[in-house]
Length: 319
Image 1 (cartoon, rainbow, N blue to C red):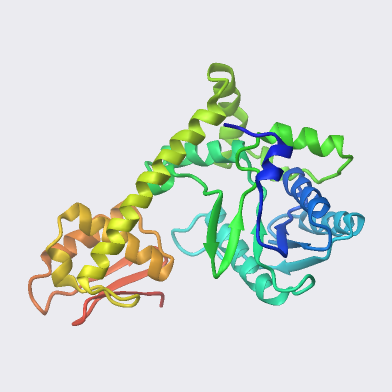
Image 2 (tube, helix red, strand yellow; image 1 turned 30 degrees about the horizontal axis):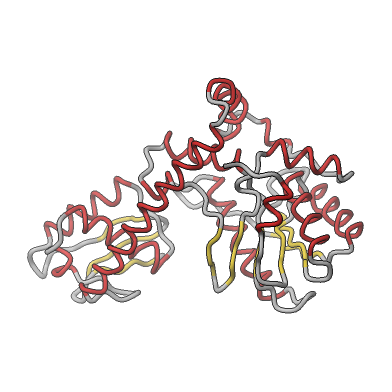
């Protein structure tokens, strides 16, 4: 069920020191203010400047103003977003953003070694993510939407607002006298997420008043099922003798095609951070099935690199 801002903050118990990813928008400004007041002297702010729009400097400037008012140290990282062939701009920006956060985790020692990172996505964002996944024909991993907690590069990441409605966060921020910058791209309906927000979300709110709760519950069920599949895939990979670099083909062929798919998908994601499309995975499975002689060559584009067969088995590389 959705929570109030105060209830969500009370339930949030990260390891300290804590870094808050600060964009300058309402949600992240509210999160920074709430955390800074709860843990004074134990919170820093990290801002990633993508440079993707003319207002990028305005966002950075406002972040500096907010941090000065809250007396919170601020670290800024400028990134260049490179879109690889077949990659969308949103995915490219997301990857660049997390790479920047990884770098900031190593560099920023204003409050000591950072233990946790908080990101300000909320319940409305969760539903939008689920609807985007549905529109793309996603499997369980996509339908799980966004986790409230995960680990990356040895760091704990949290989304404390994930069960809080976006409108409640803004109302709280206004009541606290906070200021923020509106992202002009949020009303640009050339982006699918913005069309969902502007056109679909109001209809859902009218027809299904509890949709933030029920959609989040469906995403949670999908996440539980995905966890079971991940555990099965990890067990299969161990039985197959797979390593982080190589997946033997012959033992893989002994599995059913469905279990092969889960094992391959899990190996690519865990070992290389690669998510294959359905078409790429099906082509790879076809090639695995056809690999009955030493001379059979496997070389298939998967993600932003290639899966290649060798005498030892399958490997993935980014040329």
